[in-house]
Image 1 (cartoon, rainbow over the protein chains, first blue to last red):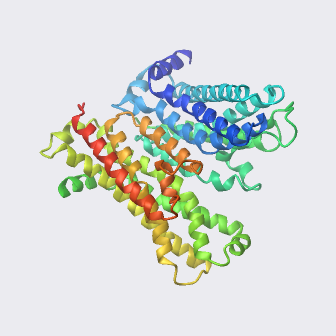
Image 2 (image 1 turned 180 degrees about the horizontal axis):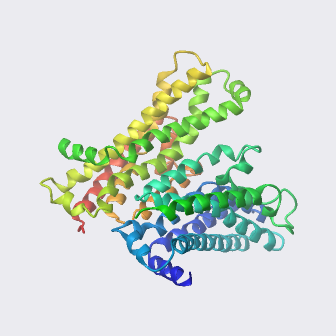
Length: 242
Length: 236
């Protein structure tokens, strides 16, 4: 498994993926900076609320589809699947290593977001202490909420040879977020809306002793959709003819 | 030129691409079916004075972001055939000029997006009738709502034709397409000279045609620039 991860890592080193990973943080920084300017001094809470919409509503779920397509790119070119699966590794290890790689890239995105949030807040001199708990809960929750989407997109990316096709599938499910997020009845059950819900600061104060994600239906929906999508992808890949 | 275009046509026949061309508009209008289904009374009361206009505006909310990513996907798919099979050498070795190959790719992407825009109108009308709106829809409003943004978005169609053909790694154009969609969605704070705001048809003179004109002119310039880069590029 470790060896497989290392081989995945070598495919990504010196690729454009690092630029892709950096873009959300730049965007968040720009948006945070602008929104702080506009309202004459923002707050951590406002910043987090803006970021959970700007970053997590459309951008993050769409980037999941780009990143998953990215880790399958080399295999789709010139018979790479044959070469990879001819190695003495089980398909399960290949599948899990790719998913792990995507999860790591997403974690990096979220860490950079955290850095962007901190820089914005400290630079603009928000009142009060830095709400570490809230920031970590938001960033971590957004990451966890992306994992089911990553599992489903990995299925699409392994199935479809073209890079744009899995992104099209991701778009088809992500754009409805713009409407779904307004619905209190449907949003908690729609997997693509989970990143926004998970990143949104809680209704209560900014103390955030409890993780925002640890309440209500959110973790259940995330867990169940992850298991379902993972099994769909895995059962497809274990039978895929290459 | 027409013959080059017909070979491009052959390449995408019986491919997924047609499915996407229909799926996009179907999704955009389909979401409104759900939206109206859930909030029928509220929406009908909100737009009571002009129901067709209200429906068109709601469809447009989904249409613009879908167009921004859709054009990137279409451009990537039309150029993708050569990248995937490493066939740029073969395509360009044919006795046709490089610029006609490039322009054919652009025209194809623009045509596919045109089909999608047209389908948006048709689906909107069908849904409007199903909702029981008056039988004669305001065609001018509907046509403008679909085709004005289509023309104003031309700089991005040209840009993505360039990016998708020049750069082999399709992750780059796809990411740029998504970033463009983000910028366009949150673009209302932008100054009017920025192209991301043009498809919203919002400009300081309150005349949508200025946005359309800016889109066509800039689109031409971007197309010309990408063409020059493509023609001078070395292919693998």
